[in-house]
Length: 222
Image (tube, rainbow, N blue to C red):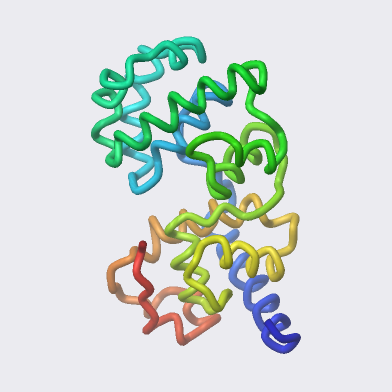
């Protein structure tokens, strides 16, 4: 990213964030959980699944599995059935139960507080690690790039890439660090309430007025 593009994107990001804050002044994570371990479980389950569906599943799941030890000793076939409706349940079950054993054995039953350590946990790539570190420990080491953030970054020309890891790197250059944590949740709310992935009327979207080319740019949600 050359200096000119960097400045343009910094200015545009600042305007977009300012506008998003007007619409969504009190953003926070939508997942419901009772402790840090349940937060990790919820975030892993949320991959390719809506937060609404995850919350429905975890309402019963967290009653059945109350402690980390319950996950450590869980039967994987039964656990798969418990989370089946979140999709990709076999891989999610494998990761969650493996994560429980690792957290129990390596970290004394508590989630670590560094990105490096979080990335050793099965099922925890950078997006998951960013969400957990920020919400569990108030540690902000990056920007969580989910499908909403990915689509937003492409649509408003905040990155040259489609890969979430590269997008995160670009966003960390142009978004002030004080805004990294809330940026994800501002963009998620925008995607949910104002700018769905499907084509829609953008004539009243004040963010599109900040960057008019966004009116005709419809990146895929992968």
